[in-house]
Length: 504
Ligand code: MSP
Image (tube, rainbow, N blue to C red; front, side, top):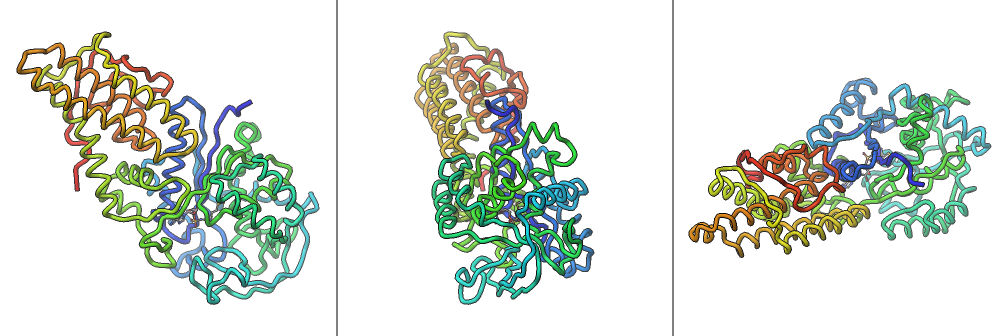
């Protein structure tokens, strides 16, 4: 039986850096999914937040002359501001420095200890601070971490280990049989390949690191930041303090992550959950990376793009549209100003913007801003295409194929623009065929209504704008996709508000 509430998460972001466009990408994708689910009438819970412990963050705080907590408060707030600016409608924002998270983590780690899967040992290894993980010789490029291009530190200490190796066979079996579903296939195969080549136990605590949550059974150690971070997915929904909510939401339906944190989510997290006696998330979707001239974007590499600046330049909807339309979800993608300009000028300003403005102008010119509908006004070509669009769109969205879903909507927009040319209402006006013009405009209004509702998860502000300019009665936020039928618009009175997408 499907769970009553769809639970989806983004990773929680490290506060050692301000949000960049890569973080914004993960979060926007999750927001689109969450808004789409809500549009289909399904109850949805969307979690995001910040990851605030570990050596890397303590070091950044020191650099800025702040205590770690002050530093975390500051940067965590920056994430919240960025998400507000991008119109991200999350249901809860978890911070790992919250008291409830700490309590949940302690409860979880105690359950792991009780399972007998934790033991004390000696560790020696190369630690990359950028990744907050131990890294093996074979993974280095000329002695440097391939992602951060920095030299890892040699660490030797006594700490606690988790018997990850016990889970090799179980995990292979769960992943191969899609009980733990990993998408896209290439990432599933990557995990399986690595899993089959062997699985070692992992250290789950660190000595000599004060900015972390103390290990309850040895207070001289703090819990490894990744174990701390992964636990956010259960602490945020009441693992320790709200059993009713926890039972309603867990297991997560979808963890959305980038490919760099695949191993943590597809191997370490499921094994920890198995040891803690909790059910596994149903699906992990792994998206690709935004690159700038082929290089990964990161603070360490100094080529970061700020989503706030981009939003100031373009508006949040243009940015949201661009990110989801350009990238094939799951694959890497290169960011270029040229491509943004092309998408804005062609798809948004020319195709969608013009369709709206031409329709509004004609309703104003020929009918003084009010338009009435009659049942026999239904134009079969547009009607059939619109119904087909709604169906295909849903199919694509259910499979997280955002680009394809947007392409479907744009086919309808293109057809509606062509319909204006074919019908040429200005010629009908000369012939005084007023009823025919009314019919054409009514069909255009219907097409725009469907378009607005379908783009709502991607561009909530613009969808609402289209809706209000055309003067549809219901509130767009209250409408469900299942209620979307062709030919339901009655009388409309338009409220033109100017250009939807100014060109650059
Ligand atoms: N704190 C960990 C996650 C813990 S989750 C239990 C972390 N944080 S992060 O801030 O470094 O990255 C968070 C997310 O942003 C990851 O999904 C990562 O893949 C994504 N991205 C970071 N840079 C990116 C790009 N350049 N492009 C696309 N996504 C990128 O990892």
